[in-house]
Length: 149
Image (cartoon, rainbow, N blue to C red; front, side):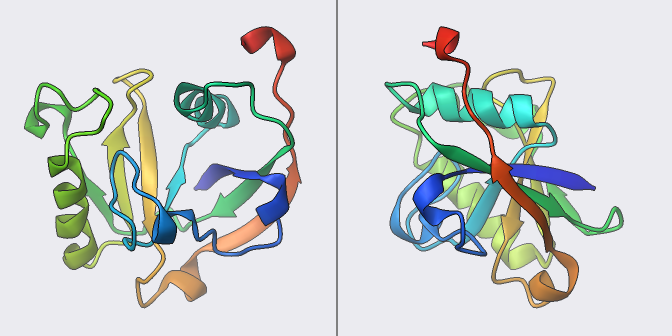
């Protein structure tokens, strides 16, 4: 399975990305080392746009390959609190990630706030099989169309 992670250009050579070690997100508190990914570049861009007040400048796309048979911890929409899409993010969402990190699965599938019929995938960087199963395939410039903001 190919997944995509957009990253600031200055971090293009950092693998695996370390952003979640230092910052909270919808699904993590700082220190929960996960990689936010999407199954398409377009959805990855929407997720970035939703979290930026200005048009992102100089982003790269990390193309990541994960085996199709990798264990997936699924977070179903009907198990989330009604306010799960709000910002600031409900703290309970990071608790779902605690369960994922303890599950032994490599990936967690979560609904996208941009389209709840689509999913994003969180990758557990500290999983014992991360380096054997998660491969950085390519890193390439991924500009944003200036008409988006």
